[in-house]
Length: 339
Image (cartoon, rainbow, N blue to C red; front, top):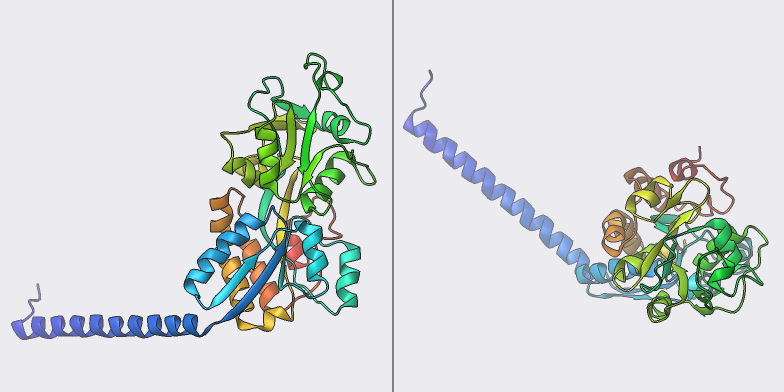
């Protein structure tokens, strides 16, 4: 066996110490560069739109501002449609959306010279909820939801299913500017279906939570994260689309078995705003950390490949929508990769 001399051991220790010192110096330099970059970044990022996407964007904004204290990020709630109205005329930098952009919104953006980059950030499952005092509605079929929510629909529980109480149904749902409203109407009532107007509507899902939580005969729908945040105040209703009743959860939303109310949610940064360093850095930070923040606020993270493709789409400045005219059953990876 080879034995090292004392001098060799001393030299070896010196080399190791020197390497450690060098590594520490490199780390210190990198840290100082990162800190300097953070301190140099300044400006404002204006976001508005979906109340469904709001919890993720708000969480990202708070963490980002902690890293970049000279950047002010504001996140508003005007509903998906309301957000696009501002975005399409250049009033905001990023639009939160719980559905793909509509043709009328595309035309508005084109008219005002606003180009946009479509980026999915999480999965959501629109959740149907009732008051905890409701002891009869553990599940509901799509047909029964249609019977309740369609124009001229059922007024009393007993009209929906035999054995349910003869009491008035009181409904709570997103306003017409909400992407969740649009998605629910199409998924439950079908294209061209008309929703009843006699329900309490709000673009703020917290208002809907309070309404159902305080009303024994309340029934409402909104994003899954708002149920998770208020699960002690609400009862979740499983939805049967023909293959048995399924409740929304991380697993059922991700694998699509919670149908037909699972869907991706988006951010839409404008191409021109994204040329500003603070906006570009914010969007990259958003995509790098969306999986973590989605899970923290109660949504479902997209596959890692989707976030990679979204980052490529943003860095390449690829504008337009691939989701607006997407065929049912096509995966998000296939849509983003152009397959």
